[in-house]
Amino acid sequence: MRKKSNKKINLIWTLPNILTYIRILIIPIIFCMLYSRNIIYSNYIACALFVIASITDYLDGYISRKTKTTSEIGRFLDPIADKLLVTAVLIVLTQTKFVSIFETILATVIISREIFVSGLREYLGNFHIKMPVSKLAKWKTATQLFAICFLIFGANFKNRFYNSGWDLFLFNVYVTGCCLLLIASILTIWTGKQYMAIAFKYMKGKGSK
Image (cartoon, helix red, strand yellow):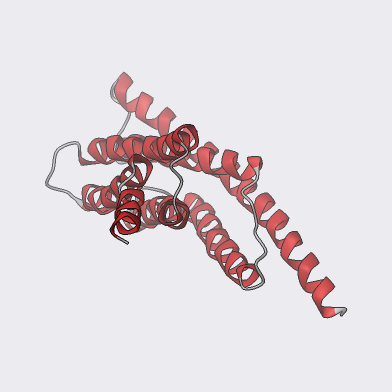
């Protein structure tokens, strides 16, 4: 019995799971940095932390596949950590006025889709039906992460008059982030439609019985 218990403990503290824990713990720090007005270059610190969190998203999956150290807690927490990272930072960006109304609308679309798809997964899970993550959904996630990173880094261009090359550079970074967020929102709607088709196909088949 002791050996079985130790195995469970080891599965909780595998390297991929530790990276997932780190990603979750970084989120409130990013939150504080974006809200801070007293720390110099706080948005750059937030951007660096967001990049680190995004890298852990890639590494935990890569390491778990290579070392075959997948666990149930990892399968449970990894998608939750991803959604927490994206939705939490998008909400903060809109609340701190770092982005315009246009990006706020795009952020709302992305967050709404995540909630909707989570509901679909929960519903289908009751019937033991899985909705695997598609390649397009992975591209969507990657585009979201790049978009948010660019938006955080370029946020300081606001209220400036482009008196230097650095100000213009920040503006270009910000615009790039806006374009990536638009692409991410389009992919968000498209992948959400694909998942919805899977769910409706099952509902239709079940209703006809």
